[in-house]
Image (cartoon, rainbow, N blue to C red; front, side, top):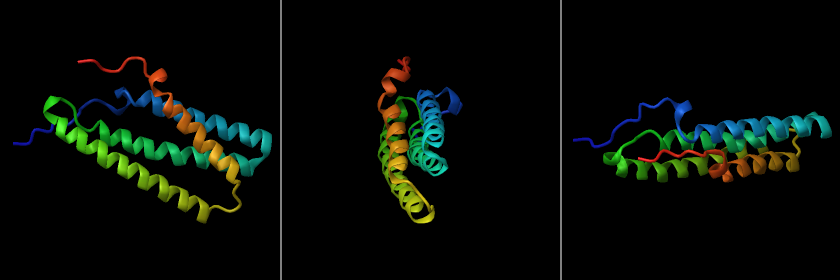
Length: 134
């Protein structure tokens, strides 16, 4: 008997969605600020840096919240490990792809966008005020 219970909650109602939405907003803000103050190369470099952080975080959130319920505890823990591994691999692959494929590129702007989006993720407990308590 399969003890895993698929989660039927829409993605926009998951606890990670406000964090991902805040990260997307930060990606846009950093890209616009860099574009305005330092030019279009810095702008799209910051945008790419933000996307390098945002896309793997979205993948991780999708993997972690696929199952719900006490019977799915083992599957949830398994998804945590595989989701984190996939997130790290995806982040490395995106960095390699951007560094090899995008010319010209401003490295400080790329890393500024990446770090700004990671900072939003690090403050997730401040963003998500109501975690589900069962």
